[in-house]
Image (cartoon, rainbow, N blue to C red; front, top):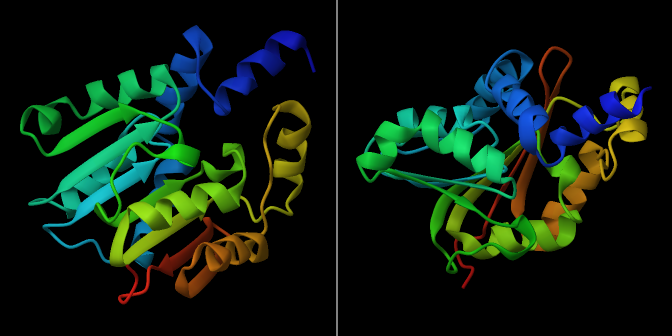
Length: 213
């Protein structure tokens, strides 16, 4: 594989420059959209919910969540400046209405107070996080008691496609359903459920205990 192509694919991890803008635009369409629609069927988002989308990419999932939490608020966070800019432009109206914020931030040290959100989502992004345990612990921290965390991936962590991408994209770490469940469990989540669908991918949900402080 050429160095130019490798550099382009590296934008999947943290979009930058012109290549990053192309990748972020692609994120809002195609398989990503189908995965998101399927993944969201695994959780209930109340109309007044406060929602966090981690690794918000191009902002399409923020818009989907806004449609569900129509009287609530959706916050998107991403480590990439290119992603933040694209997501802000994609959700400009909701931002002006005060129903949405898109900020730059690191999932391993989220810039939010404890117990701020009812729902947290992570679509096709955990492969690039700096270790699941610390990041899942952060998501647990910012969720309210009873809050729900959804992880949706196209990959099972064991398919040939992800293994190929792992050789090309520096920092990409495939995760199996068992590894995701284990990290959720260690973070304190309960009622952990996993669904694997050959067409769409993997959806794993966990709940922060109602009695959690």
